[in-house]
Image 1: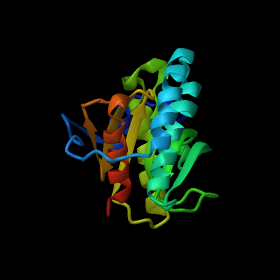
Image 2: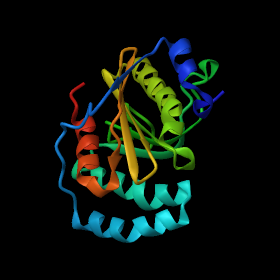
Image 3: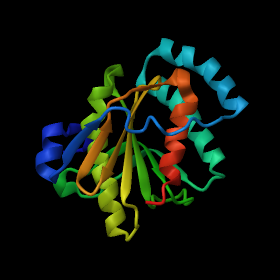
Image 4: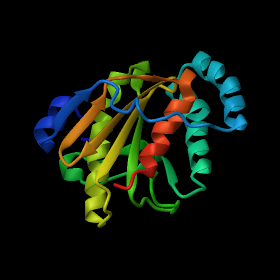
Length: 201
């Protein structure tokens, strides 16, 4: 079994997870300014990525430039991993590749202190990525516990590139923000992600 094979029912039953659905859970987080370079990059890339209409095009042309912008704003104090093997507990199915992992550590060669897992939605369907993202969040939580990383909150992101959805895991509760955040308001998306990484938890 791998992250992508989990269902919401399995997440709840196998890991004792409680799901909490909240409207606008992250909506109060303020927008964040971003560079002219990102603005110009997205202005050019987004129509192309949407016309190609593949997960790979959205990942490379939309998601990656946004994550690089965040890393720049945080003066390279975080690390980004894309398509990385993240085998935490194969016996429980917490194994496989993660689309993106973001770590609070600046160490780029190995994964340390993962705090955000980001999953690219399949078939342009946000809901399709929920269980996979939750499984990766649980794996990140377990990884941090085993490595004595005192990170109490793990965040999850599902995106089609143009639509973004956010979650958080604390202890055994995953809170899902029912709002969807759109690329037209990229400052909001960047603000939320930077807020996650600036958390003292």
